[in-house]
Amino acid sequence: MNRTPTLPLALGLTLLISTAAAQATVTVTQAVQAALTNGTDVRTAQANLEKATAANRAAQADPSTLAAAKLAAQQGQTLATLQLRAARLSTLQTAVNAYTALLEAQENVELQTLQVQVDQKAFQVAQVKLSVNNATSLDVQKAQNTLAGSTQTLADARAQVNLASA
Image (cartoon, rainbow, N blue to C red; front, side, top):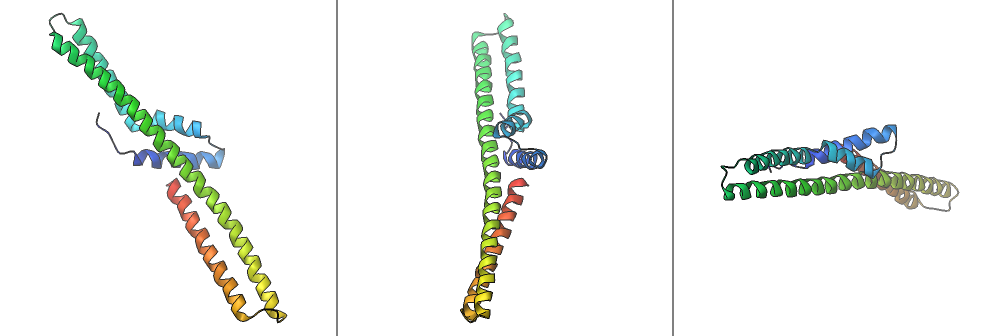
């Protein structure tokens, strides 16, 4: 079987997931089914199996075909069947990995958004404490640096969602 890279499948799957997620929630079952239906590896393996099956039928039906050729045709069909199973398993694994990576990235954005909110409040508290002489400018600077760090982490998390969706 001439295998094509699974990366385009993963990218296509994550686009399908992110597009469908904007419309409605996509389950992992739906994502896997879409990948198995649209995956080039699976379609190629299916076509190879159909060719091998036709060749085997022709070899078995032809009385002039030698026994070795008939056996080779049977083995070709068996090999094509196994390659189809392997393509399905590989596609399944790729689809599940892409799906979970996207979900993980989305959850991380939610978490980092909450962290930025917490750090914004901490920065505001530090400013109020400074205004009532209960903190130093260093305390405010630390809170501001923490906020800047969590804001950057949120930007990184959003970029990860974009990467997982691309």
